[in-house]
Image 1: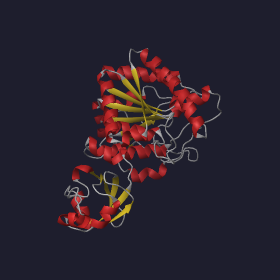
Image 2: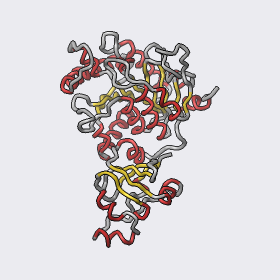
Image 3: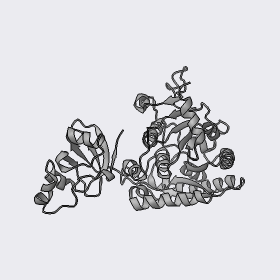
Image 4: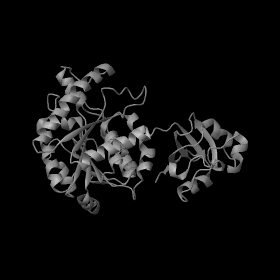
Length: 382
């Protein structure tokens, strides 16, 4: 059966990130389903006996708060959404603490915003905090800090969905596998609402081939749908981390089933090799501020030779950025080669594009370094 070997490898996982979607975690009334949390706590106990560390990324704070405040659906204005998150976060963590505490497991709350992961020092601080919790046998429960984060379309401080957050957390802690629990059995071959013969896809090795199968969000308290899960798959598989999307609302012990190598859900196979922690941060946690267009020779040197990007290989700079900002590196046809931290601003790059390294100081009157992007500051796409 396709994917047998990949699923067998999941048995050796020693650190797993599990994301619970709103549709899994919510009760029929919109609050927190204590029954499902009790089931997850039982799995956490079984995983601990097997020597597996667990990190939980949870949704449900806004839904729980909305239910407590008597709101009929997910708030549409930001202040009310933040108020619901503030109320719901306490209810949610109390439910986690009660369920896991009954199994003798301590949980620790970790609230993050996009800004926490964009800044390198705060990124490292978040990673250190998670590692400290895991080292003490605590299960970190991670959620977006919806009570203080503002709309991503205004300031870019939100993840927008917890599928993306779970992918970044899996990368942050160097997980062996990410499991996303949802209300579907996995990625389906077609929409089951319109096609009675829709089948679960067991293994995905080419994300581009299945992207068209993604649908939108389908729950009044939910942000994400299969589209955001495929986006998460792109992130984690590029980091060398497998992702399994599986049913968590009705299934018994879904995480244990995944880590036992059973053919459940949809397994997204990882890319070969793992990016370093720094390159994972550069590739996925930072927002690109502009683009550098490079010639064919520079493209080959970056991809095949693992070289730095010199000004001689740069054709143009697009966008407005400063030295130290993240930029994407693309070919003349627009194909992305990778992402990296530039040593020079967009204005400076425009002036030295095509020049030799020895000419930088003459052109600018100063020189920060020989490279526009040093190879240590570059994450090259597969």
